[in-house]
Amino acid sequence: MLIIRRLYRNMLFISGAAVLIAIAKVVALHQVTPELLVISGLSMCLGMFPIYLPKGVVWGASVICYIFVLDTQGLAAACVPLLCSTFTEFLRHYKLQIHQIKWYRFMVTLGMFFYSLGGAWIVAREVSFLPTFFDILLTISAFEIINLAILMGIQRSLGVKVTLVDSLRMFNLIPLLATSSTLTMVIDFANKTLVIGLVAVLFACFVMLSRQFLQAVNSQEQAERQYQLIAHYTTDLIVVVGTDNTISYASPSHEQVFQCDTSWVIGKSIGSITNDPFKIFQAINRIRQEGTHERLELTLNINGKQLPVETEFSPVLNDHSEVYDIILASRDITERLRQQEYLVHSEKLAVIGQLAAGVAHEIRNPLTAVKGFVQVLKRDFESYSQSSYDIVWSELTRIEEITSELLLLAKPQKAQYKIVDLVPVVRHCVTLLEGQAHKRNVYFDLAFQGSIYSKCNENQIRQVFVNILKNAVESMDNGGVVNISGRLVDDQIVIVIRDQGVGIPEELKTNLGDPFYTTKEKGTGLGLMVVYNILKEHQGNIEIHSEVGVGTEVTIILPSAQQPGDNGVIQMQSATMVL
Image 1 (cartoon, rainbow, N blue to C red):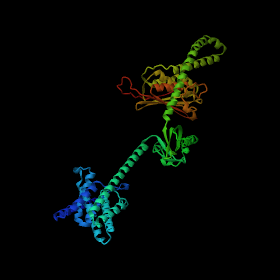
Image 2 (cartoon, one colour; image 1 turned 90 degrees about the vertical axis):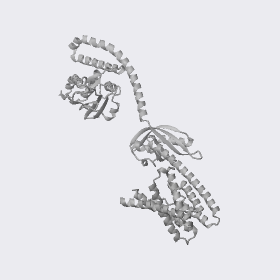
Image 3 (spheres, rainbow, N blue to C red; image 1 turned 30 degrees about the horizontal axis):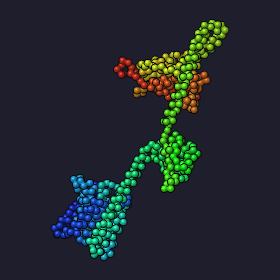
C-alpha cells in the first residue's frame, strides 16, 4: 500500500514535467502572443490575491485565465498561465521566500493541475455545440471536480483520512457561475478590450470584497478564541439567565468545580441551583426593572455539592435599553469565610485569654491559702471524716489544675526546644496515669518501632499526651485497652492513640478544641484546646476519628529530628511494652 501511495505521487510529479514540455513547445513554435502574456500576468495577480469564500474555502480565481486560453488557444498555451499562477501561489504560501519552496510538492501540484486541465479540454471539445455560457460552465466544473478528486487521492496517499463528502464541501458553484458569465462576456462580445478592462475592474472589486470578508472572519474568529480562552480558563462561575429565568449558558468552570457537564445546568431555572431561590429571583426582578448591578452572597447547589459564592449580577441591554439577559458571575468565597471565621475565633480567644488571666490571678492567690489551711486542718478533717477531706482536697486540686490551664491559655510562654526521644515521654505519661486507669479497669498497650526523635519542648509535649490519654481513660467506663503506637513516616512522626470508649457523636466533632466546649460532665474544654495550641506551635497536627459505641482514634503528627550524635542516622530499636 505504501508503494502504491508513493507511485501515485511520483506519477503526478512526472506529469508536472509535461507542463514544462508543453510550455517549451509553445515557445519553440513562437506562439507566445501579447494576449497570452497579458493573461499570464493576470493569472499571477489572481494567484497572489485569491478569493476567500465562506466555510474557509480559498478559491484561486486564476482558473479563469486557464479556461480562457484553453478555449481560444488550446491545451499547450493554457499551460503558460497555469505555471505562472501556480508559482505565484507557492510564493504567496511561503511568504516570497523562494529558497523555502518545496519543489517536489510544486511539481506534484503542477501535475494535478495538468490532469485537471486535460480533463477540462476533453469536456470542452465534447460540449462545444452548446451555448458559450454552458460550454464554459461545464469546462470549469470538470476542471474543479477532477482537481478535487486528485487532491483527495494525494491526501489519502499522505495518510490523511478524507471522504468524498469532505471534498465536495470544497466545491462552490457560485464562483463557477461568476467565472462562466465573465468568460462568456469576453468571448462573445466584439470589443474584447473594453470587456476585458471591465472584467478586470469587476474581479479587482471582487478580490477586495473577499479580503474584507476574510478580515471580518479573522476578527470574529479571534474574538471567539479570546472569549473561549477567558470562558474556559477562568475560575469564576459564569451563567447567562434569559427573560424566562432559565440558564442559557454556563461556563466550563462548572465542570471543574461541580464535576458535572454544563448541559446539566443549561436549561434549568436559576432558582433550582441555589439554596435561596426567593432571594435570587428578587434580585433579578429588581435588575430587570431598574437595570442596575447587584452583588449578593449565595450558596450554589449543583450536582449534590454546595458552594458559598459571591455573585455579581450584570444586566445585558438591547438597542432599546431593555434588559433581556442577565450575567451572573460567581466567585468561590469558601476561603474568605474561613478567614473571617478564623478572625472571629481569634478575637474570641483574645477575650477569653484576658478573662482567663484575670480569673486565674484572682483565684490562685486565695486558693494557695485555702490549700495551706486545709493541710494544717488535715487531722481535724480525718477525725471527723476521712472521705470529706479527700473530697475537699481533690476539688481544690482540680481548681488548681483549671487555673493552671487558664494561665497557659492566657499567657503562653516561649518554649525552649531540644531533640527529645518521645518514647520515654509517652511511657512517663502512661506511668502517671496508670493508677487512675487501673481503678477503671483500663490498661495501656504500647508498640513503637524504635526510638522516635523530635525537636520539641518536652514539658509541653508531655502535657499533650497526658491530656489525650486522660480523655481516653475517662471515656472507658467499662474498662478496656488503650493502644498506643508510633512510627516514622518519611520525615514525620505519627503516634496513634486508640481507646475503646463511648466515642464522640458526629455532630459534636466540629466543635472539638473550642474553649469551654466539652462532652464530659465535669470537663472545662480547655485541655483539648491546649493540645491544639501546643501542636500548632510545634508545627504538628492532630486528627480525631471517632465512632459512637466503638471508640476514638487520635493521631498526633510531629516533625521528626535526627538523633543527636548520630550524624543524621536514626538508630532504630524494637520496643513493645504492655502495662
